[in-house]
Length: 86
Image 1 (cartoon, rainbow, N blue to C red):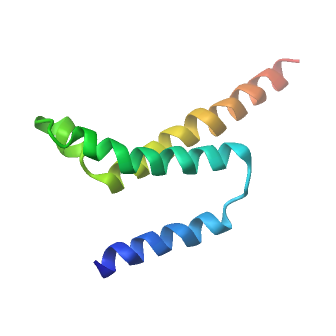
Image 2 (cartoon, rainbow, N blue to C red; image 1 turned 90 degrees about the vertical axis):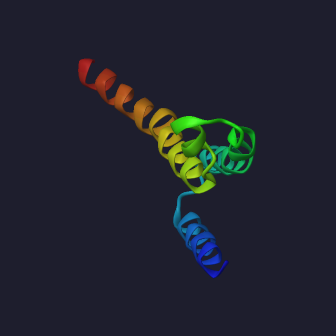
């Protein structure tokens, strides 16, 4: 259990240093919700999908990465492309 506590505290320390924008808050909230709920939902699944989706740390990390790309990085890239075309 101490390893889990260390992991959680490290995550909170990283979150304290992150900028408090609406997109970042949404990413944090959705990742936590998915990390809590999805493993319980996918625990009965068999195969690789069941194994991967039943790990709450993996679900939280991957959802945070995907949401960061979709909600922050992709819109910034699109704005950059539109800005160079003008």
